[in-house]
Image (tube, rainbow, N blue to C red):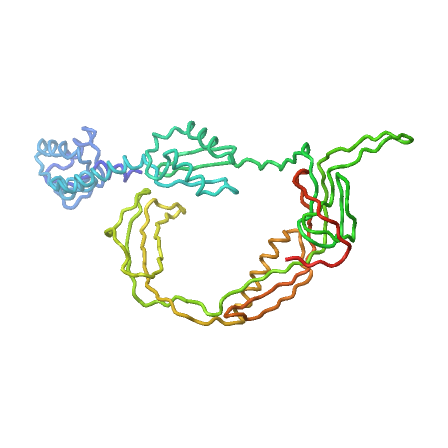
Length: 415
């Protein structure tokens, strides 16, 4: 720490020559002059180091003691800065740099979001931008209490919001609201209706009057559990108490058969790059895009646009609010090319299986699949015949539930 203080104050090494050097040194001590590194070089020559402000005192004492005082070396920050006293442009640049540090350190350049799981950071940043909080905003101008109220009102998914400023970085901490459980309005009468044609394998009735039983064949749209039930009269009573409307509930599992088709042309147009391309550059600074090209169309009639963005990341992972964008336009032409039948068939099979899984839901199970392929009029057509086990019961409002005719048990195919 001592060397740092001396560096800031500045030090001077002086060489003193005279016949009475002992008197000179005693006079310096009596004057409470700070000096050190005394070096006797010759019988009548001594070198010592003093502070920058002590040089004048050394000269005065040397004159009284009839000694010659010569400066040998200067060290320290004051002497270093003295070299630039006539370089006005450099001094102005240093001053502007220090001023810019003081000014720009009050602005927010990076916004980090923490604590979110279901709500994406992009949604939170977009909402903040609507309230004026974005890279480049003046930090002290942000009313954090009012901003928290606006964010909680604007985003019902959040239960807590806090914004903390750390220099040029804003830290956003959120807590998400627990999802509300799905409430069933049991005051409205409903029927449980079949969503597909099939054979019932399991029937669980929680409320309502079952109209089918295990092993029955049902059609799509048929009522499985009715919300219109008869009120049981008391024993030995002939009075008819009528019917009651309830919110029918239950689970109905069934074996179903589904047929799905898909086709694709065997002669397709593919892109063939020509090797010609054009590039455009732009800089995105604090949300403002600066283009280095004139507005105009692309000379290619058919082209692909590839955008490459280069961002700068600090050592702590923070992303600076500046990025370099490059837009590349690559020309191509369309050529007719025959598809490989095997590859096209594999692609269609995967697409049909994905659609089937979407139909039967996560709880459904695919029991058996058969594929039939054929080529018709330049197209490859693939048909999927699948046997599934799925939950086919769906609650429908009572007045919107048509009752189709009942069928006898048997195997039914549905598309």
